[in-house]
Length: 595
Image (cartoon, rainbow, N blue to C red; front, top):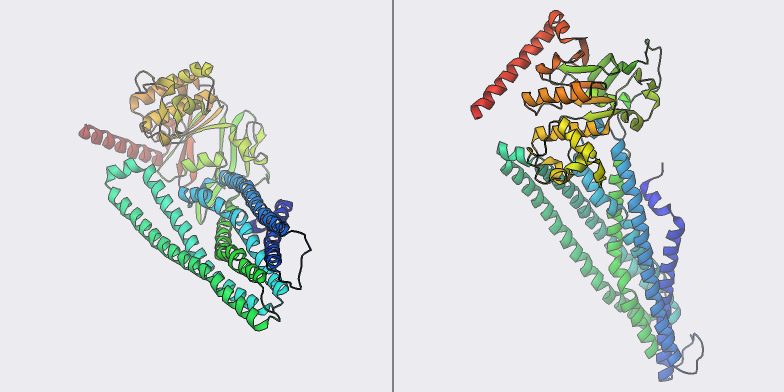
């Protein structure tokens, strides 16, 4: 796969050539202008030189020629800026879409070590930064390079002096600017890195601000953010200082070049300088070359800056899901698989790094069956749910959903069979109606379905502090809803979309016992009675209402059966239920004390 730099350079290569061609024309017209000025002055003063563009009857023709050259040079320069910005926006869209697609395709276990702030920084900083090559580096480089190449030859032809003094000065100045620009690019890179770290901290602070406030950690978080900001400010001061030094050097360049060029003319020219030649010389050196020399350090700075952004994006794009735990399409000899089952799993294993999370799991879930998954914290319950959704790198010997071999399906096709309710119900910043339907601008005619879904999820509009009913705006991440309300909205969403296989990951943990019983009666054992349900739970009250229990320990299914069967035959299960009952009683007593 070619590098992102090559992609930026060669994607729509014809447009890049047009930009370079326009820059060359801008430089050519800019360097021709002084010739017209020279001829105009020499014609007025009656001075004759060896070099003539052409003979004209009136000096006004030279004025018109100079004016048209300046106009054409400016027009082509503006066209370069427009085309460069257009190409940069095109590549930003390409990179943003690729970043979005890559983020969607990376699994939970792969993304777990990457903070949200890093992804935000890639979108906000590195996608635009990577395309700086097009909207800054390419036009700045072309408008710097062509004048620097053409000017020494124009001076040599116009004034009949050697090239080497001017070229030596240009090379020395270019080397100095390159060094300063490289130094500036390091400040830029560190600036983006520090900004990404600060954004990650602020994002974490905002997302957990309630918990942080309750735990009394506000000052610790603030100190951490301020410390990061202080380092960022120090780097910014160094960056601005270096930038001012670059500007100072660039401002001094034309003076040095003037001195060198005039000295070369005095020492090497074979004839006396005319007024027209003096004007043309000063125009080329003091005006025409001013912009290229001012742009030169920033050309290098933008080039290095763009390169660091491209490298950061390239590193993220090269991130691969854990290959050692990748699902496989090889299906060896399978146990007897029956199409009457909604889900059939054989040989499910999941490794994340050196940890073996799920170990050789085999189980079936019948159509319409209600199965509970229980076990101590860390036994693998949630990872099992995510593995069924192909959100981990789990390996299956075989995996069927109904009559479909899930290993032959893409991830989106597999997920389309399920509705998933996580423990932390997902809420977006939108109206209650849109959160249930999971659609923006939903047809108001479907309000009846939304209200019915909420009612079955025990979310009553007239008692839940939603003043505007379905139109009530819910803040980002559901900050104005309780944990129980968020879970009930998530349950209403599942009912609204009517999937046949439900994965419920401890989605009743935040509701009270009475509400739990009502949810069982109205949804889990009521409206969803004919759906296949897999429920992760720590509530003992739910276990005698399910058809079967999968009991997990250390990533293995060590037993399965009804609640009564497991209590009767499995000592570990009895110990587990006793521990859960004691924890529930302790929590209830603690709540009573707070009350």
